[in-house]
Amino acid sequence: MKTEAMSIKEFMNPVKPEWLPVKLQRHFKKYGSVYKIAGVSIIVLLGGAPALASTGIDVGAKKLYYELVNIGKWIIIFKGGIETIKSVGNGDLDGAKKSFFSHLLIYLILLGLPYGMDKVDEVFQGLNA
Image 1 (cartoon, helix red, strand yellow):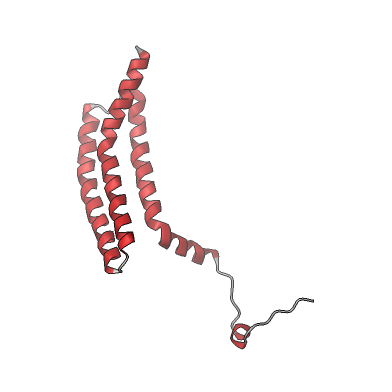
Image 2 (tube, rainbow, N blue to C red):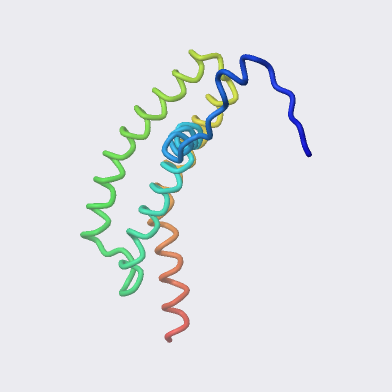
């Protein structure tokens, strides 16, 4: 027979197993920015995929894309700035660096996407000829 020793406090207030919503909330609080960055990156990359199917980015789509980049730039700057300042205010300098570099990376990917699509289009045009 197995016995277990516990204090009076543990006996009077037993540890209750955590509910799934509590675990999920804690997980998303901890890794929420990672999911946001990954989601935005996937949306940006997949948003350009249908344009690659025909002839890459045409002139009209480039105008629209650069307008969206202009708006997205300010959203990234404000959101990244707020998160970085919050992290510094909390004394989390490593978190501030990660936040800054992750938002910078998203912005650079956003800017480099048309160039990458044009290069992929050139590769596939060379194969068809």
